[in-house]
Length: 416
Image (cartoon, rainbow, N blue to C red; front, side, top):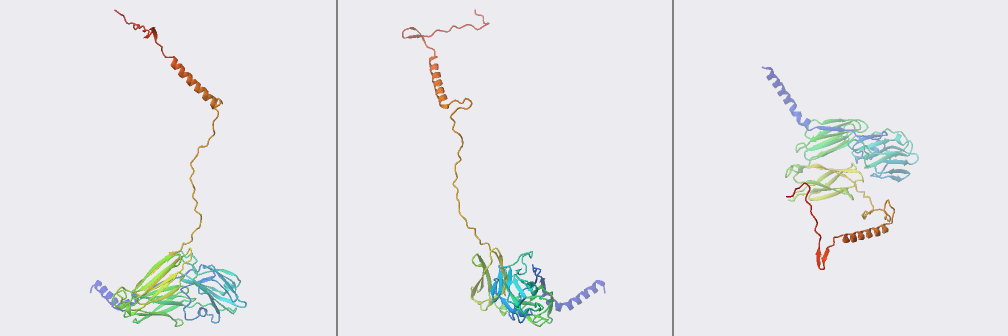
């Protein structure tokens, strides 16, 4: 047996062993990102802390605290709280006596900042904002929403839990894992696959994992292994396999518009010209504030949404749906007009500035006197010219005679 033939046999055996696991490995791809707090007093975390299951303060470990939230970017002045906002930064000026802010969370963009109790030892405290955004991570975003946990003035450890979710379409499921105060260990379980994927995410970072789905493997579930809490699940709809290749009984489409009055307009439709749509479509919308909305559009229906964009800011809306390519719209709002008055100047013709001359230069004589002298000289010259013409010599009355000039021969010429 030659050496080359032996190598080929070993390679073939390796392929036979690895092949059963190749599908699962190919379907697994992850990316990780870390948000930038932009404030040394804060700790940045990706995603959104609210999970809709428990209160936000309970998620942070403050079960008995009072949650103060406005569900927006505005300030709050009630119950002895004085908190102001300029849309991007918060200032805490006063809280009820005998209480303590255990945590204040500011959400904006795709992440949130957490300010612990030590930040509020002395009031007022200003410049509280969300993590930085932009290509260089150097811009403070517009606040999506904020909340604080106020309770007894005791030292309670702040614990930010692992959060995330699962979304998808007809071809893949996307698992988002947002690490909290501690490193996260999450199990991703695609149905029909023997071995689940265990993903470790460092504290304060976000990991995005894509899993292929099909009719044979339609469901993907993500579970926090630390506490067995389910982060999310996704099931591929049966409509992906009915009718045409673009979704069959559904036809999700989206279009955008922009205006100074409404910001970004999103039009989501689910209809076909041949009236073959029969199922609902759930659109996932990420708003300019970074919040995620799920919009259900029934068969043969259109749903419109508008999302405001602050003046001088750039808003981005991202829309996805099963069977549709994810679409994004960016809008930089610059709608401030400068009021003024239109001024029209009438052009003036240039004039020659000078001084009226009444005396001649050098002599200093009056011009009118010299004009008379000049006129007299001209008249005298005309008279003398007339008188100087030759007059005829009259030999007899009625006959003019002109004397004949005598001619002399030229010098040096001899006559005969």
